[in-house]
Image 1: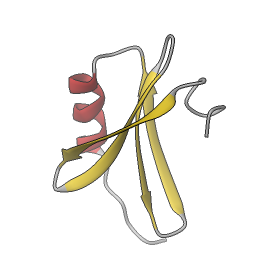
Image 2: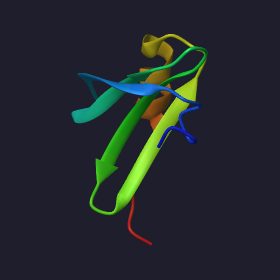
Image 3: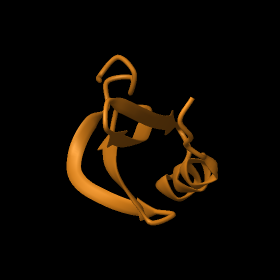
Length: 65
């Protein structure tokens, strides 16, 4: 996961977004919200605040293909 999160590390803290639990990762430049459901992992990463990352994460919708 460090490659995808640009060397961010799991803080052990979580954040609930849209009723779903996301794990907070912090890095030297990029932070990330990471969520795993079954075999799928979703990463929302960037230089934005966790508040803005949560807005982006909350706009995502999952569906089976």
